[in-house]
Length: 124
Image (cartoon, rainbow, N blue to C red; front, side, top):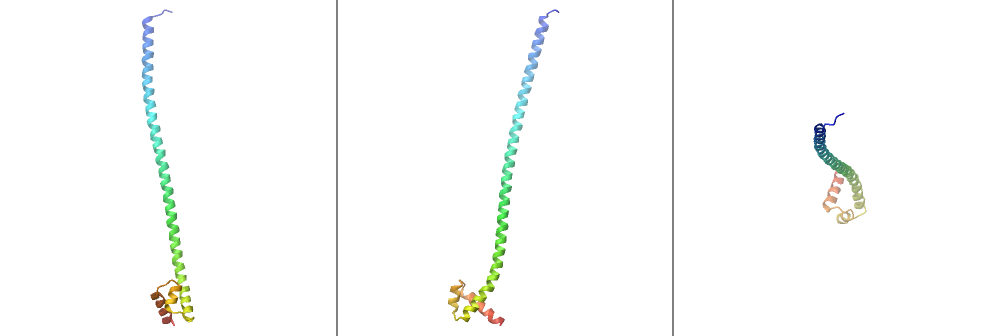
């Protein structure tokens, strides 16, 4: 086998060029991968943020539902209390208390006590 220095030199240059081309390609691939990983990280952060916003919206919605239920119960209670208040006003009137005394004890305005008394009289 004969050694051909020109052929060896060409092979070495060829290998060196191939290596340099691959080195550049690898560098581009690494940069592209880094960009992709950065984008993935940004997407993950966005998803986490969206998840937190959804949880907060769910909590707010639950609070609103509880408030609505609480308000509905308060309306029911007030309606029932209205019956109790009417009974109390009637009993206090029978006991001889004045409108001022009744309104003070039940934390009602005089006008409301008078109105309720008037409505009771009108029913009878």
